[in-house]
Image 1 (cartoon, rainbow, N blue to C red):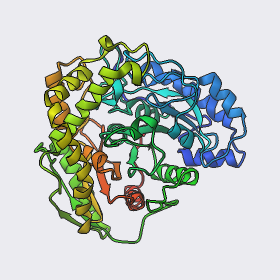
Image 2: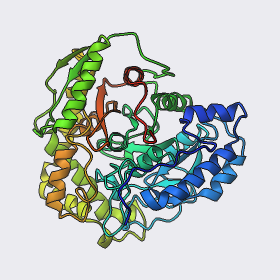
Image 3: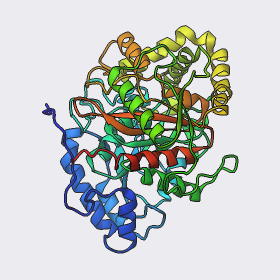
Length: 471
């Protein structure tokens, strides 16, 4: 049993406490080699994995060989991890589930190709909860991923393995994706920056593009705003969606003073807890001190949204559990599914006749959402309704009804951006009495990641940088 503590891998090696931008620059100038950096990351991974359990599949020997090759791209030579729902040639994609038993992928997935074109050295796959359905990276009958800020607590999900690795200093940046908050939730839990992009900003993963409503956004979790900004710029150099405004390379705060809408409680009626509310209000005061106008606002959202999204969530589980052999692997074994996946599928079956209206309203949420930005430039809210829970609170070993209600209450701000296809960012502006990070959430107009990044730079500078785990 892990003794609860704060832990990290930061030390005086090639990685030091550099962010990904700094490491890429040091490699470019010849002050570090990609091999030195990979070796340092692998050594850190060996030290941290027994304590945080965040790596699903290591590929360390292959990474060392990869580091010896000539690499191009804005992150050439920088080590990273890819989430276990994304195909990497030669590795299985098990979706965080004991039910899958996938064969090794024959080639990199479409999104992975765009990401890897930035020059990353891949150290392996990061852990995720089963199919990304949970908001905590926990398992049925297996050890959870642990939060390096306090190992008794959740690292969030579904990119919880990625967030734990970056927060602990194993890698400076890691792939994440977001179907209901899964970039922003683990970023919030682990004190990182997590920007979910506008729908269509990057090349879609094959499974996401086949969805009736594509709720999945790809991205990364990082320790600095400039890493996230450089990632978006680098991805745009590989693929640029001409239907969206370009992001370009954002390098600092914008000059425009913004109209900021403030939302404190969720659309499903869940009240925000006191510590989270205080962190959001403190950020609002900082923004006002910087000259922005902050005003409480109502959310322009259909009253059925929370129910509709939960039914759609259940539909995805129903499809996976019913057609797993065709969608995932010939060896798919539905008897190995956890309580959450089973319960979500049953929830959908009880509500399946509502599917046409659910899909109609979820698609329409894009227009409902866009109306908010007639009067506001960004919307400030909590990422989550309460602070990061201890491990066990969201475990799939809980009975489904208890877990489902806890998830609905906890994850009530982030899903709107997934249905609407809009950008949103999680920023680690506060902390709890126990020393865990608390994040705030900014939502932007469709295609306006640039404003979110400029505002994130401004807040990062106003705070003198984000709080550090090794301080």
